[in-house]
Image (cartoon, rainbow, N blue to C red; front, side, top):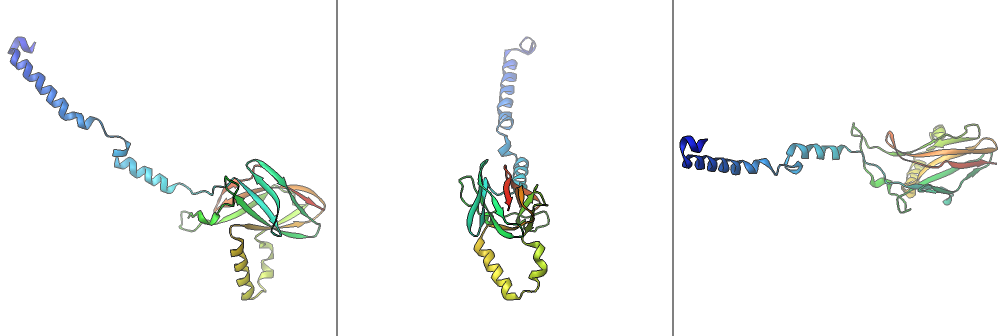
Length: 204
C-alpha cells in the first residue's frame, strides 16, 4: 500500500527504519536474568543469611565411665543402658557425623533473633518415670553444688573442656524393670537431630 501511494523508495526507507529500531531495542529484550537483577540477588543473599544453621548429625554413642555402652547410627543400634535400683550413673552422649566420626558441635555457630548464642543440649523423653529418673546437667543437684568452693568450680570447668562436645546426663534407677528413651539433640529452641530408635534401658 505504501508502495502504491508513495513509491518504492518510501517503502524501502520504512523497512530499513523498522529494522534499525528492532536492532536498537534488541539488547534490552534479552540477557536480563536472575543474576542481572540486583533485587533478586539481595533477596537470595538475605534468605541465605537467615537460613538456620544445623549440626550435621547421623547418630550418637552413649558412654559410661568412658566406655561405649550404646550406639545408634543411620537407623541401626546396638547395646543399651543398665543401672541398678537406687543407683545413678553419668552418661555422656557423643554425636556422630555421616561418616560415623565424632561431630564437632562447637564448630556450628548460630545466634537467635536477639543476638544470643544458641547452645546445644539434650532432649530426653518418652521413658517410664516410675522406673527411671533423668537429671539433665544434674539440675536436680544444684543445691548440693552451692556448698562447694570456687576450686571445685574450676575443676568442673576443666572437666567440661576435657569432654569436648559430649553432652552428659544422669540416669537414676528407681525400680526394677525396662523402659526406653527418646533422644534429641537440641539447638536453641529446636531439635537438630532426633534418634530414629528408642534407647533401651534396664533397671535391675
